[in-house]
Amino acid sequence: MSLKIGDDAPNFTADTTIGRIDFHEWIGDSWCIIFSHPKDFTPVCTTELGYMAKLKPEFEARNVKVIGLSIDPADSHAGWSKDIEDVTGQAPNYPLIADTDLAVAKLYGMLPAEEPGDASGRTAADNATVRTVFAIGPDKKIKLMLAYPMSTGRNFDEILRVVDSLQLTANHKVATPVNWQSGEDVIILPAISDEDARKSYPDGWTAPKPYLRIVPQPE
Image 1 (tube, rainbow, N blue to C red):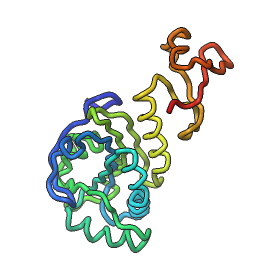
Image 2: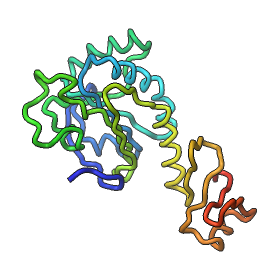
Image 3: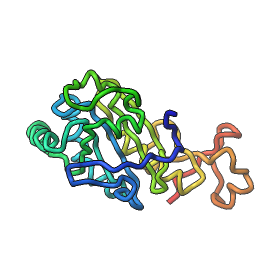
């Protein structure tokens, strides 16, 4: 069965660049971004891992842990990290999973469960579907799923923006409109009656349509 937003994030144990971890224990009470790569020493992913390393303080400020995945072993990750630093100026400062048996990739639907063999001898093209992003909440449920083609680098600024929206809407009965950025106006959920909305927003709201009630972002 394929994973969906709202499902429990499957737990696993795996070797990483910081040693063996139990995924759920490692997340703890934090949010988590797990993002995958088809293979070490691939060009687009090299740029992505370096940029994510630069953004890590922004994620940490939001209580978000970051972890990457590639199908190659941890010692290969170490060599790749040097290349990433050479290219981007920043080596990965977060753990990378060594998914040599493809177990995590299959568990999270990045590769078909019946995919044969292990990482040895596989090319990036063989692992074309292993370019995904999952956001996981402290409740260990999946909050976001993204999948990208091999040729398109991911937009990690967008992932940070989505984290801001996820955390805001987890704590307030609001939704965020198109292209929303933190600090901008938000939308009262349609399920909230006007009577109940006035308790939270006594100054009222702007309503271009009865179902579209716009208010300043809650603190």
